[in-house]
Image (spheres, rainbow, N blue to C red):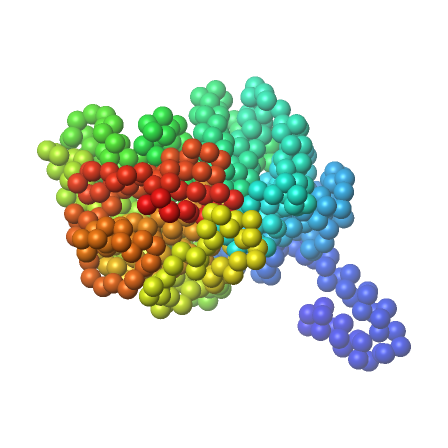
Length: 579
């Protein structure tokens, strides 16, 4: 019989001292939650079966069981993630939170922001390590407090970006905390711990810039972090990391930068790609099987980033080596993908059929990532040694893009029939740039509140559908998801992506009708396919200001249409009135 049931039974037999007994029993309810159960289950706040050496709850759902604490020696160090929800100042003695605002923001980060940043997978960085680091490192503590304030502001709005408002109390507080974080940050990289501090802060300020829609600043924070990471691998003996007592591991940091680098490569312009930092070095051999979703995600993201790097080199004529070498590299990618696919299938087959909602989303998300890798690899199907650049396929099989769309739809919890209505206008989904001051009063059509995640997946997959699918119906469904379910995944903004896809579709369809741009903004119903000669093959955004960019597209024959002014002012809304 559970403690709660015993409490109810005791109260029913003695009304006279019921309150006293209830209090006594309640103390016993919370005590085991800080002393028993594996670390992974306690982070997730689920009941652990306490099997040894690894609990069945973790192993049956594909998670890594991090084992059990020694109650006598480690209870205090893990209080940050094990205690019942309450104000952090009471569960973290010695944590320097000097005001009620800081206490509330830290509590919000721990119980809300960290989970949303993790996306569809468990994240040791956001849910555990960063919280431990904040206990001793003021720069990290102030930065996550600033992120919590930004997140609270974001979810109160309609768009996946926080508007600039120097009079908003929460934003002023967030900026102040960011300033305190910078002031507390050391600039030395003499030790591995110093470098980890800088790497962690680069990640946090990358996210802060993404919250505000400051793409240029976010990209520069990422560039700086990639440089420091490369320096770490060059200057330190990584095999002796165990001598460094920093709460954040180098493997965790490297995985975070792989994800952010993958995000950035999906949106960077030709000019920026030409001078971009090299990818983080691989830190794994191809596994014959996966033990966790996190491991699988890391392997597939690393492979996808390498594929994008090769493709971008081919697109922009920066190939190094012979054509035969490029073909060999493509074949190597295909072989690795096959090995990873077998490992993933085996891993998923071993999972318990009784999976919860969170586990189901992890399965959908890793499958979505694998299918994106498959789509990019199939683009190389027609490759030959004579003309590498022009032989890379652009369109993919409708079954592939349809699967991407179905997976994203289920992940978002969207209706399968959701699409763009006939005669839809941009104002139905976002305000004109001149209306940004009245954004709070504008009834923007959406199905969910804005979401901010540091992980990749949904937005990039939907963008792939809008750009690669031949079917107008599939593309309209993808645009509807981008606009009706506003979310930001690092530098990826679903509303901006949906807006760009909207304009591209109108250009392509009106060109096919022989009336380029006649419909302007209205998206009418259409069936059938767009021929290659009318397709916009590539869209590049050159960020010319904190929230201002210039968009340029290239058709299949390589002739670029005139530049288009894209305003991402405040809410990242798009003004294409100059088309």
